[in-house]
Length: 315
Image (cartoon, rainbow, N blue to C red; front, side, top):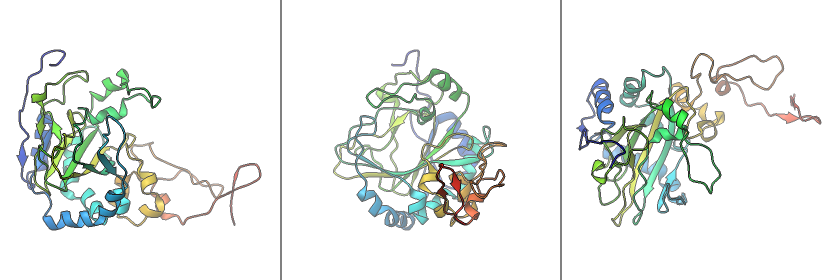
């Protein structure tokens, strides 16, 4: 049980139609922390995503940790690898919901995580957690267990930092490891000990979508079946926070320059606030502060170091 009293606020996950308004969906997320959008993509659309990503997913090595699992794979760099994932990331319905749910805390938003999570047969259930802990965990040596910075953790309770999207690339069933989520747990303290009955399997058909906040407790379920459970994870966060996936390395300017401006901004090629995200091109001399979009427009310029280790022009 919890340290303190815990009562289930919403003992099931609400199922919503894709045409439900962003305002109504945001209201459900505020109360429950999660919902399922039924049949968000067609079978053909899911097939197209599968075709884009199959060689990358099959080549991905398994995780090797108690938290990440030993029979789970996580395949990233989806924006660079999949045109159909790029289309999904800028889907007007999703972006409208991002603004409705996170708009009180920022006026710019970004892609926080893009990955395919494949839970293989025999995998154990993941430890329950909150995704917002990504910003409050202390950096420790690998041999030590992660610890939460209490000061940052308290700050995170004052905002909602992210909105998570999990598209079912296979059916999600309790037997094959559907995400276990605790509706109504968003406002509970970090050290709460939730009973097993607080968690509900997010069962949904292929093409449907689990949407949940960064504050709700959840974790992948155990896969007791003989088939893989595969989900496409696209998460959005406030534009002034550090991204979990380093999108500038996954999609450097030479790749991102080919994308639509809306997607470029979501990758982080935008200022996240009045003074967040500017850069100065290293050459030529005399260059001034520029917005990140400038890096996508300027021709690539090879850089070299002089004998003192300073940048010099190749011209």
